[in-house]
Image 1: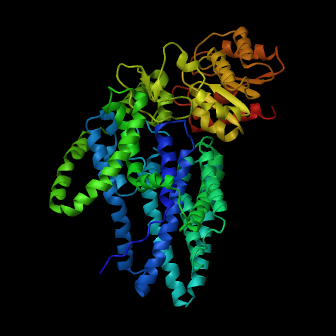
Image 2 (image 1 turned 90 degrees about the vertical axis):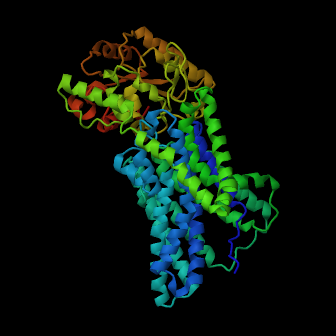
Image 3 (image 1 turned 120 degrees about the vertical axis):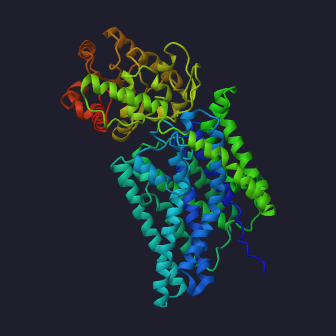
Amino acid sequence: MKKSVTKRIFGFDTLRFIAITLIVVYHVFPGALPGGFVAVESFFVLSGFLICQKLMRSKKKEGKNFGTAKSFINYFWNRLARFLPTLLFSIILILTLAYFAEPDLLTASRQNSLSAVTFTTNIVALRTGVSYENSLIPNLFNPTWYLALEMQVCLIFYAIFALFYRITNNQKWRIRRQYKVFGRICLLVSVLSFALMAVYGGYLGLHDRAYFGTDSHIGAFMLGAAFASFLAIQPRIKPAKRKWLSWLILLGATAGVIAMTPFVVYNSSATFYFALPGTAILTTIVIYEILKLQGKAVPKILKPFEFLGSISFPVYLLHYGLYVLFPSLLSFIPLEVTPYLAILASVIIAIILIKVIVPFSKKHKKVFALLLLLSFILPILALIKAPEKSSIELQLSEAAEEVEEKLDINTTNVALDYNGAVAMASVLKTDVMKWFDGTTNFAKPYPVRAGGAVYGAGYVPGGRAWYNTADTSRVSALSRARVMVLGDSVVVGATNSIYNMVPGAFVDAKQSRNMTDAINLLAGYRAANGGNLPRVIVIGLVTNYYRFTTGTLQMIMDAAGPGHQFVFITGYCGDYDRSAQNSTLYAFASMYGNVRVADWVSVVVPNVNAYTYADHTHLTPAGRAAYGRLVANATAGL
């Protein structure tokens, strides 16, 4: 008997290609598409749509046996068989390469690889509080959070689906009524999940909880399932009468998703209120228009994208690990080239996997089994080699002990992550901050070549150029901003809070900046933005020692040009006196009507243990929120 094969729908792979492209760019070109992560909603909607259709076919085929333990095991095994081979291949390859790379990059690989193969990466991220956004050492298997969440949702969805149809079959509902009611249930669950995402990520600012939580991220999947249920009511989808109109709607919805990605940021409330649900809705429209265009002539130009979309799953699993490893493995190649190599390598390996390895495994099972067994040697050695803590985490621990001993302060709660690094930077003897790009609250930590001048994702010129050079790649965001905030490491820590509390904010903060750096920054951004800057300019650059005068502040105003409202924030640096600099700010504000001072000192001093870490300078979560409120209050009404 011939095995039935489900017809592949032309257009779905192109949708996958667009989504994976946005995600890959988000990962390997930080800042180029800060909202590229929203494309993951497209995968969830498409999965919900296809899995719901598959279960409907299974229900029809299995009849009364659907929903039994055997039926569930078959369903689970089919999902596992779809995911697990590619996942295992990716883990084996990444760990093999990691064996030859910087040892720090293997940190926590035992836990991370285990969570990957058990589909619990998102749960571990929530439990440990370590995700893309705050880890010191990147998890080589970070992308498997999506796979974990989808597997969890698939199992939950099967339970809901089977229970519903068992109940309604007993009540002898007609199939049309079943589809209609089940679609409404899916839609209700979708709305509730998106509402939960908005509460967690938007209202409470718990971005990781909203993004990685199964309950708060089931919405897009259930929207796709609801759409599949409603479509099942019709005998078939009517082909598009006006082909041009369907293409226009399809391209418009796709463009809507792409258009969001340069402007959306992960730590913004708007992301969870609008961007993620909006992407899911636009993807549903795209799917509908694709179905309406089936059977019509399809442009040949789409065929390469269809192919690339068909290999999107292995590309998704491979690209991030290769991107992290390549700078260490390929130290003879310029660092700026390695992202492109990682993308190219992931595509080539994916093609080899699908076109060569999979067919070989079916034809030569015994030989393949032996090769598979041998392929585990280096991954096992890599896991044995993996340190429990990275060198930077050990430095943080030592710094915490030193501070605890000298200042008699309990540092138990100092996290060994980005925030802990900021907190302890002032007492460390090494350049911990080389792992970060301070233009946002966190940028992915890439391997740093020993003895070189390569920091993070790019080259740091000599002198103070790194601190006072405008980031011209962010000019589009600047042009839409109402409030511009320039700051140092204290502001780096408060960046999330500022974005959440100050509408239309643009933040550029780096550690170790001083007041003079604002002059070049303002001049650079002004020149890059056609002579324009946001009306309100906030400057928090007093933390680091530098004795500036009112003349320095006048130069800052001149660099910005006329027509601006200025807010200077007083600085506090633990045991180091900044009263002279703060007095200069007040003296300058008394000279101009468009200058005001926001007094951070008066806020932090009464709450110094709650608002700052052991160095009494850098901000705890409560301190970041307080700093954000200070900026919001100071700029309100300006």
